[in-house]
Amino acid sequence: MNEMVTIPRAEYDRLRAAAEDLADLQAYDRAQAALAAGEEELIPAEYAARLIDGENPLRVYRDLRGMTQAALAQAAGVNRVTVAEIETGRKHGSVATLRTLAGALGVTVDDLTG
Image (cartoon, rainbow, N blue to C red; front, side, top):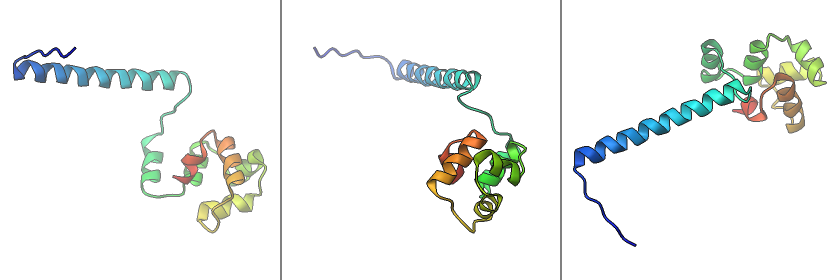
């Protein structure tokens, strides 16, 4: 069935803008629900700027959590020197190590490697 409706361009533009507004509101509602459920978190601007500036994500998230290298190493079950070497870029860390560090920080491995 091929039905066609013709409407003035102004009405089409108004309907399209309303649909875009609705999509934006739905995205906002999903984001708010994810925050409320603890599935997402807000990163303070200071820490976001550090990530954007290219600072090592492990260091940024460790600072955000208020942890020392030793505390993070203990929580993740890795050597403190390993944490320091990853933060300074001397080592990249194995997938297993990054996974345990991410778990201790409550972030994803992607957060630490992005």
